[in-house]
Length: 64
Length: 412
Image (cartoon, each protein chain N blue to C red):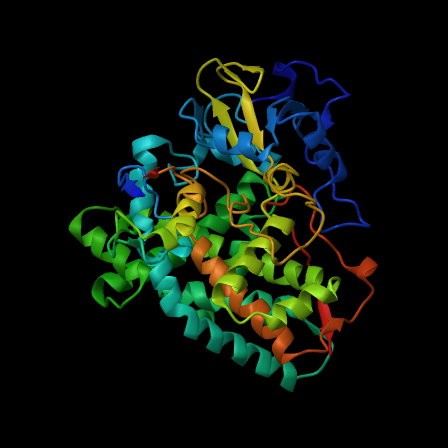
């Protein structure tokens, strides 16, 4: 799985961090998404799919 | 303001949004609204001024419309479907805010406000939220009973938290709670609105000026620094502070009160809540309560900026669009058996905080406050119960910005 984030679209809702904190973080300054792991391990795949599904700004794209 | 008589005559058979909730099931969305879910994801409805905006009720359709660039939040566009007369009368002098700005304007304003509300920062506040909650419950247990939960816990907790975050002295809470609750009332006039925002604005502007001289580690100091750097004007910073102060009060308080009343009717779910140890399970339980109650029941309001077809509906430029969030959260396609409160349901895709770029800025703070409060209240007071009959509870009118209960007398 490859994760791609779009900083321009991000509105810092924090939902990705709540869903998968090992893969996503938020920038200190303005809360914009920080991708910690662009190729997360298989055991995190479900959490990452959930993170993408609950991003209100559709800023997370997955290449499975 | 767009007058009703300039619109098409309303069709009396159209669903009237908002109708009141059913007194027998006050925690469920109004029955008429729920019935719309059977008529497809998009219908036309009638609102208070007689106009007939589109109602987008399906969960998937709500996501699509709230992410659609052909739809605007600009409440100055003629035909905008206001939730009530007070909003209609005041919208024309609303400045640009996170609520009514689109696109790049929205991004610019929102990014100035997001820093204090990130998930990691809110997680770091969890011990403070726990301490405040325990102190308020200690006070409750030490005092006379029954007690009104609204003034004992529901309002003070979010108020203490938002004050600490913003750097507003909690000692002034009587003053700003009065104005904050006033700002969200549906029966205010434009003149009332002006007076309340002047009082609150004057107070916050003076605080911001003080923070320019004596900065601390809080949001107002942050805004004060931006004023000094020329990124914000004092009136802009005052407005941002006012939005955060008001939004930080009402909604979380309402969810604490209503959620408690709902749980007291579901003892099996309280037992389940008490057994939860994993923080993710606790988070999930709170998301289910948020889904079930959806206090922002007036929904999100939008206006189409061009003609387009959506879910079989021919939407025209200038058409009002109402997105009743409780309907999406009770859409059986997204949440099977929606009337069942099930704290094990995977519910974090609910729309209680809205959807799209305008989704609630303070949602992570609200979530953690609720996780701590619901988790602590029934553990500390296992015999907690209503001190009056459920029928005696007075619910807020359906056109209030947040659904709620005025007072919740409890005993133990």
